[in-house]
Length: 495
Image 1 (cartoon, rainbow, N blue to C red):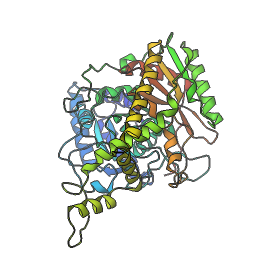
Image 2: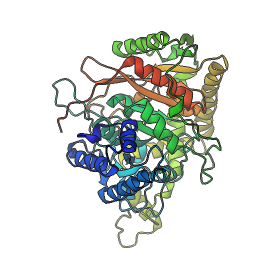
Image 3: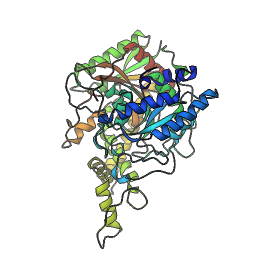
Image 4: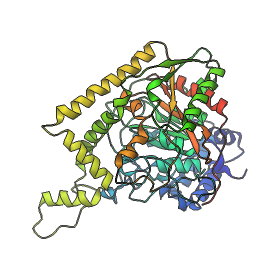
């Protein structure tokens, strides 16, 4: 078999079980593709030795007949996950040289399941961004192009390296994290599938924190079946994470029947934004028709507090970030600034943070510190928390009324060019999260499924939002949508 890197998880797993291919062959195919794709800047720390060692171990395990679904499958790990002995920088200068002595729970679970780590993937610094332009490694680049235009496009953010690597077939799948849409938006921009599970479904232990009440890990894969396979391996209770749910993890793949007859799918009127491109509007309407044709009932719903979601998110997330990022001070690990004669500990903190944090991280830390300060705590932070409760209740009311899932666009546009969103107006960039942040604020599962191309030939995604802890049902609805949409487009290789 040639082009083994182009396989999905399910296809590769089945080929491994039949003895048609070995994990070493799969891994070597991916390593070759990675070395030929430096122009995408997706992989920022390559780990070929670890990959081949794990691939050999996986082949032995498969021969022994006792191998879980992920065994022998080569994947990429977002640079936010701590990986033992491998640089884990969260794409920040301040964590330069940091090689953890421990493994994050999620990457450990994947390793225990036999998955092969190919290396660490590019991302926005500390996961703060929607375009992967805030990374200390430089921009990640999308494998997609607009028509015959050579302009480099964003793969989305913050999991831009993961999205680019999966879309370009550099790995079979990748881990991502989602605080306000950082799995779903890049998945939509690059024509892949990305699921953010219910908050608490995956352990956050060993994942560099951005906003602790919003962060959640999830898989980024080539299709819905692969998402189900990988999600099962990533989930599970972890006593090291106090927010991790003590719930059994179902066999998500076994729940993919494609039968959604009688399911109620809600269409929220508040997501019809002014100025929404006609292509996104049409894609949304087409998606609803596809689900209806598959036997689902389409109902109009209202989520009245949606318009407050973005401002509430951009108070809560920076507030939690300013608290979480206080630990990066140059004292114990990571970068420490050069100090002048007579400098004390205060100067060391100031100089290290000024050098180590990029502009976007500095901006969010300052916003967060401001909203938590004595005179503004009630006016901003507490008010945002109350709004969050109202947003959560909107969803609870809709699900209590019998709605099984909610269909919305994943992004307000297709991928934009790198450098097209100017730093002069960060709010323009923040608006990219308009359809995704509500899901994080409410702690719900959400999935982005590629559903079509815009007139320039770029992928567009649809988002499905599910009931809490009901990822199996959500994946099945997504599977029905994927089957109906029949999206098979791939980027042409230019790199």
